[in-house]
Amino acid sequence: MNDTAMTHAGLRASDADRDRDRVADALADALSEGRLSHEEHAERMDAAYAARTLGELSPLTADLPAGAADLGDDSGLVRSPDGTENIRAVLGTATRKGRWLVEPRTNASVLLGSAVLDMREAVLSQREVTVQTALVLGSLEVVVPPGVRVVNRICDVLGAVNADTGPGTEPNPPTVVITGSSWLSAVEVKTKEPKAVERKRRRD
Image 1 (tube, helix red, strand yellow):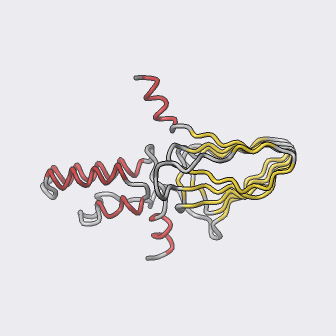
Image 2: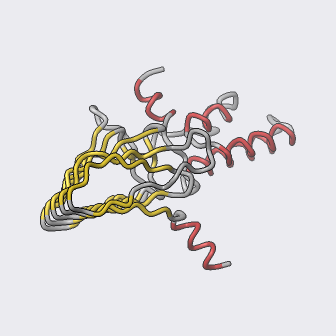
Image 3: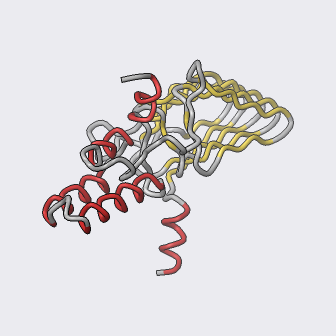
């Protein structure tokens, strides 16, 4: 498997991720064309909606004709060569939200400012990612969807850190490890449903 394939295989498939819908459409086409029985279609649909990564989605259409579901090629989510992203906020605010790739390591540097990492619709590049902090007189807010665990390993000096989401119910959940240093700063983690789920609940 090449590096690109490995990258896509480890990406987290969120409820809002269009790749899940593409797999569902491909399976529906295969059912209508007689390539899948109703039982096979039902089994694969169950697997699609239970999938946590794109690597789990890809095999569901691997034996179907080309064009059934092409995952990852036009997603726009490309890992950096060294697997890191640098986010800086100096006397201001830096925000990451929507559909974005969380690199294996995200460096968040804040001086007299704030940074917000909203991962509710983000794609995790691997099962465990790290946010390396360097905070001075600032704040960091991390928002994750239900099912993602956050582990606090920050060295805090005269600040406030609320960065543990608990063990969760899964034996091996997707995990965000927050580490680094925080001087006279605040770190807060929030667990929220993706915005699409929130909007649906409000409509209901």
